[in-house]
Image (cartoon, rainbow, N blue to C red; front, top):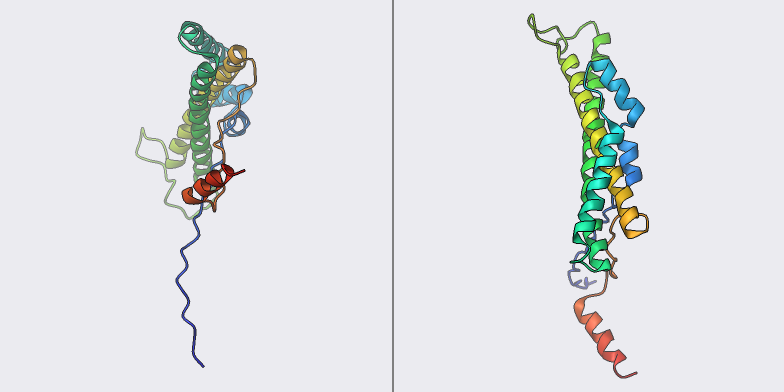
Length: 195
C-alpha cells in the first residue's frame, strides 16, 4: 500500500488576545486609602494625601483639555484623552502587579522564619536588617507607590468623564476575522461592486 504525500500545512496563525487594563483591575491590584494608611503607620513611612493626588490629577487633565479645546475637535479630544488616561491606568496597574509580587516575596521570606534550620534569614551584621525585613520594607514602599499611582489614575478617569461626558473605557481594537487575508477582503469588496 502506498502512502499519499500530504502537502505541508501552514501553521495556524495565532492572534494573541490582550486584555485591556481597566480601572477595576487597578483597584484590585493597588492598595486603597485605608490600606495605604496602615502600611504607612506600620513601616513609619510618609502618609500620602490620597484625595490630594486624585484631585490634582483630575484638575490637571481638565485644565489640559481646556487649553486644547480650540485646537482639537470633539473626536480628537476624546482620542487624545483616551490615550492619556489609558497611560495613567496602565502605569498604575503595572505598579500594582509589581507590588503584589513584592508582597508575595516578603511573605515567603517571612514564612521561612518558622523554620529552625535556616540560613536565608539570619540577622545581618550589626546595623543591617535581615533579608526578610528588607523584603517587607521594599513591599511597603511599592505599596505606597502603587497607591499613589492608583489615585492619579482615578483622578484622570474622573476628568475624562467630566470633559468628554461619558465614562472612560479602555481602547479595544476591533478584531478582524482571523482567517481573512487581504486578498480575500479585496475579492469580497470587488464582488460587492457587481451587486
